[in-house]
Length: 139
Image (cartoon, rainbow, N blue to C red; front, side, top):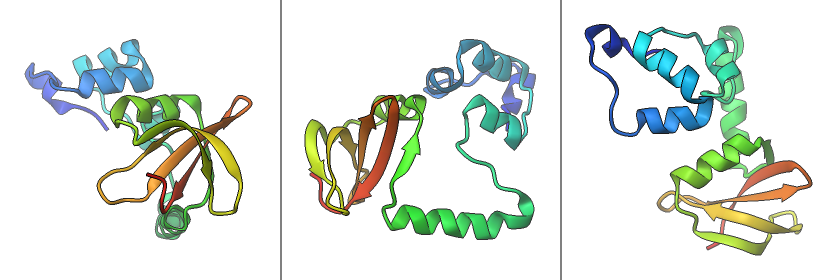
């Protein structure tokens, strides 16, 4: 991963520097955008640019399992940075209200997001841990 335009003195505009600096910090963003240095997937995961990296040998299997879990609406734990990223990127469908999850558990949702006709993704906090789960009807 890298921005090869930097070697031609063409720098990324629009929202790339803004979003990237929120994910990985200003120093790392400037390093990548000004130098055009290319980083591998492991370093991108360490920086927080990507959430997970799968080995080439098990990629197809791991991807299929991930997509099945996502489509089934399984609950996932996320970090605070990921929660704040979603809050910055998408306007919430709702904020701060009780929501019943598919397993019957009622949570005090911090917010819910949806893209188009997709199911709503609900975010909530338990102590210092953040969770997300997709629900069919949450608008």
